Image (cartoon, rainbow, N blue to C red):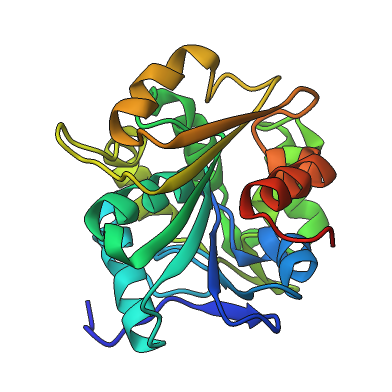
Length: 263
């Protein structure tokens, strides 16, 4: 990888303290635009595309550790000495890894619906295989892509999320995300991003969806081993995508945790 490759980002807001937002698997910075705008009056919001996602660079290495190193490179390039970092799902794993790698650079850590534990890699394989099975050279429209993907992924909302990765028009389509590398790397991306002895004693918030199985109350003791100052919030009516399914509740939890005036 070119050592000067930087993550693609959108920077928004009037505040001085940098606040970094990191999306989940197959997501992109666009997933955070509403949250970024809501908090932009208080912070300098940085929404990122992880490597092999969105408009960021593609690389054969796709581990949590390399993604943490990407964030450090990004912070150094932008002269960010201390930041608030918030990540959802895969992005939450990267945020946890970064906080343990560079605790002096993190003022506050926010993790959305993920825990420092192993998850079944099989959960994501059908989705990635479905995307890889599509012959993009034979597509004539985005509507046709949706129809073909519907045969393998019947959930309309999830399908629309996945299709945000489709780039192009008419008969020239490609995936923005590096689907094959993500498929090849899914084992390590699904594993616990932390190691025995990892530790971040700074202020931390873990937000979980009450309808999600990714982060549950029984995971709290394990979280506290790594993050002894962690606080927990539950959004009862949200699933895994807590920042989308209950955006108001998610923002309320952030506002309370960050001790800022209501936006």
